[in-house]
Length: 187
Image (cartoon, rainbow, N blue to C red; front, side, top):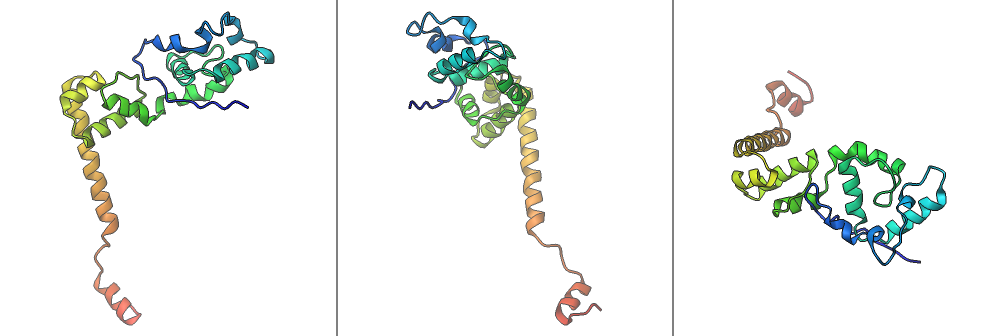
C-alpha cells in the first residue's frame, strides 16, 4: 500500500504556471498521458479513478487544486478532485485562511490571497512591526491604504482590550447589594 502526503502548496504569484513542470500529468515519465483522462463524463468511473491515481502521486497536487480554485476552473479533475468535489471549495474560497500563505506573504513572497488571508497579513504585519510602506508593498496597495488598515487594526485591538477589561472587572456594587450579601435581605 502506497501512502502519499500533500505537501504545502507551492506559493506562486497570479499567473505563475511554472509549477506545472513538476506535475505528474506533464511528466515524461508518465507520458503519454491522454489529457482526456482528466475530463471524464460523470459515469466514466474508470477514467475518474485513473486520473485520481495520477493526481495521488503528484508533488504539486495542492498547488494544482489552488490554481483551479483561484482561476474558477470548474471543468475536469484538478488537484485530485472532481468538479463536484471542488464545488463546495469554490464557494468557500473567499473565506479561505491558510496561514502558510499568510506567512509566505509576510516573508515577502508574491502570493495570491483570499480576503481573509489579506486581513490576516495586515494583523501579522502589525504584530511584527512591519512598516506601513512594507505592508503597502506586500499587498500591492497605496501607503495611504496601508495606513488606514493599520489604524483599523489599532482601533480593533484597543476595542478588544476594552471589552476584555470590562468583562474581567465586576461592576461596582450598590448599597442594597452589599446589605443583602451581608444580612441576606435587601434594605
